[in-house]
Every structure is written in C-alpha cells, then in structure tokens.
Image 1: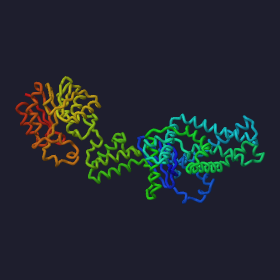
Image 2: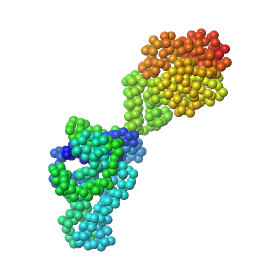
Image 3: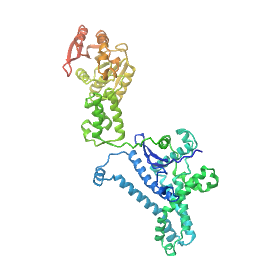
Length: 590
C-alpha cells in the first residue's frame, strides 16, 4: 500500500484536501462547473517546534482544524451559492474594515464549540448527577459518562444524516475517502477506479471523535480531582473543558500511531481500536455519485501537484466582479480588434444577464459564471463572428429566432419587405416564402396575417432551423425542400423571396463578418448576381393565382435589371429602403 500524507474534509458541494505543503478546495458551483482554490501552507520543517512536540502538536492541529474547517465551509458556500453582496455587507466591510463573513465564521466556531460543550460535557454530567444520582467519585460515573457521550454523538450523527444538505456533504465525505484509498492502492485516479474503493478510512475525523471520547474517559481516571471539586457538577464541567486540549492532543497521537501501525504491518493487532470509528463512518460517509468523485479527484490532484512542484502558484476562487469593470474590460477587448460598435457588447450583456438594454447600468455585479460566459462570447465576437451568431439568436419583426451559420442573418431592411407584403395579405391568402432560410419572413407573415404559409429552401439544415423557429414562435407553416420551384406544387396569392444576389467575384470583398461566417450558398447569386431572379422571372407566374403578387428583395443597382426580366408577365413597382436605395420590387401578375 502506498503511503500518503494527504487528508481531506467534505465541504458544501465539494472537498478540501490538505498535503504537506499545500491545500486545495474544489467545489462544484450552481452551474455544475468545478472550481478550485489552492493555497501554500507551511511544511512541518517550516513550522514552529511546537508542531513537532507530541500531544502539543495534536492540540495545535485540533485548533487549526476548527479554524480552517470553518473557513473552507464558508468559502465553499460562497462559491456554490454565489450572490451579490448586500448593501449591509458592503457598508459593514467599509465601516469596520473587516468582511462580515469573517465575523460570521468566528461566531460559528464559538457557537459550534458551545453546542459541543453543552452536548458532550454539560449534558452527560447533569444526567449522571441529577437523574441517575451516581456519585462523581464512583468509577461508574466516568464509564457511564463515556457511554452517554458516545450515545449522544451517535444520536446526533444519525439525526443530521437525514437532512438533505448534510446527506450530500456525507456523500462528498465518501468521495474524499474513496479517492485517498484509490491513491493508496496505487490505482490511477479515475472515477471508475475510485468508485471501487472503500468509503471508510483510518485517518478520519469521525474516528478522531470516537478517540476523543475514549481518551476523555481515560483522562478523567488519570487526573483525579479534590473531593470538593468532584462533587460540584459545574466545577467538574469547567475542569473537563480545561482538559479538552489535552484530550484532543492525546486523541491525535492515538490516531497518528494507529495509522503508522497500519502502514508497517500491525493492522490486525490494533484493529479492535479502529472498529468503533470505522462503524461510525458508516453514518458519516455515503456513496457518492460520479460528479462528486470528480470533485474529490480534482482537489487531490491539485494538492499532489503542488506538493511535488514548489513552483506551482496559488490559485484563488474567482470572485464576482463589478459591472463597470466587466464592461470596460470587454469594451477594451473589442476595441483592440477594431470592433467599435458598443451595441454588440450591450446585446451580449443583455443575453447573459437576462436584462433589457435600458437596465444594464442598474447592474451592480456580475457573477463568475456570467463573467466567464460574457468573456467567451466576446472572444467569439473578437474573431469577427457576427453578434447574432455569437448569441445564436436574433429578433425579426418582434419575434425571436434561433440562428446558426447555415442561414443568413435576417437584415433589418428585410422587415420592410414583410411590411410591404402584409398590406396585400389577408387571413384567406396563401403565401410562399421562397429561399426561406431561417424562416424569418414566413414566420412574421404567418403570425401577423394568420394565413396559410409555405416555406421552401434547398438547404436541409436551413429548413431544420426554420422548423425550430416556427415551433418556438407557434407559427403554423408547411415546409418543402426545393431548389427554387422544382418541388413546389399548387398556386399562391403571394410569393415573397429574398434570394442570393451577391456576385460570385464580390463575395471575397465582403466584410469578414459576412464572407467568413454567413453561408455562401445563401449569398452567391452567380456571375452577375442575378441567377435566381432569372429563374423567378421565368417560373414565378406559373405558381401565382390570377393577379397574384411577387415581392422581391434585391441588391444595390439590381432593381432595373430585374424589372426588365419581369416586365412581360408582371406590372412592376419599386420601393426604397431606409438608406434610400431601391431595394424591394412588387410585381403583380398581369
């Protein structure tokens, strides 16, 4: 069996591991991410000589365990339930120059010690003196007192084990033990290997608690009190409290001795002393799930690496950041990449923080998870990915649409196409959205006019997304995969189309956001950019009812050429966009 000095403690949704020169706390936060904080600690050689003196070192270890235990519990709680500091917490920290949680931790330690003293020192003595009436000088008083302490401890542990959060902590306790056992068996630290190992371990705080009770009985025999003191319950309680550090020191030495005896082959000889502690561990350790084991492995490996390599630096848990700091940091990143449009950052922040744009400045703090998400999205935008693809959604005519790079991003100008078309569409109309892409136009018309809409596109991926968007927006639409009119059947009152219209040679001259991310299939209109308009001019009339209307969007300087193509079968009217460019064509079947 491999020997290790690494030991641990279960914390809220995580595990703390401590080695010779380092400690690590790993916690799975509310978003399921494992976060780890590491810290350098003094080795035994670097510590005071008192840490090497038997019994005294146990007293010091006991005190440090209490303090560090509360600190790690507090830190794990902060990571798991990350919340913005309240106004009172901010005021308190500023006024008294101390973190309120530090005060809470100190109070918790005092309260915990008070409860322990009340349960395990005061209560047994009062029961023996007042109820059982056993004289303090009688040896039975000490033996039964030890039994009462053990019974109270068992009742307490069994009772709290039914509390949901405590039960989860006990499962993390099991993960901690299993991980250490796996390492000591010289197995690779994988989830599968750790699962096979025992959740009981010789060097456990639960076993230490049993030894404290055992040693306290021995100390009560070895340190006799004057008769006047012995007969007074409260004097005896004070003495027992005063000897508690000695009891802890002796219990520590006993635990350490048995661990050494186990390593050098005297396991069977001293096993009876371990049995009660191991049985108690059946209460305080529960079977962990794979995610809990992963947390324990993370903490163990972090300590192991730091013990082996003194050059590894400490890592702190990331903390909530002020909104203004986050905004300035991300704005600087975008500016460095030449992206000056502040609206892009605003939309990213709105998406992550779940706020309206007008509410952003009211935000005080950004959580770690929110910060990580914002940073990742800004990084994508810095690579020239359009913000709509970064967020995987956009808004069109008041409807939220999912987006990916299988479809074009619906332009603001295209909303004008819908507005124009809707003036000629009623609930009785039948409408074909040709080259539908994300389904933006068809969905907007369907929702507004409540009419029958068919969406068609050559791309299977585009149709899949369009169907998802229709479902999200509760739009009843028929979908057809078709290369222009090839698979279209029947006639329609209105056909709306925003086809590819960029010249093939011009695609590489477009902005990086367009040429590098938007699908060329939806951009490339052929050598002159008019390939699809030629097909429409040739075939559209056959799919329109009498006096049916065709609405088209086109590129700059294309409207006149398209008008010439359509003139024979249609009467034409051209409309301009917001930039006074001839952008939309209304063609009415003659």
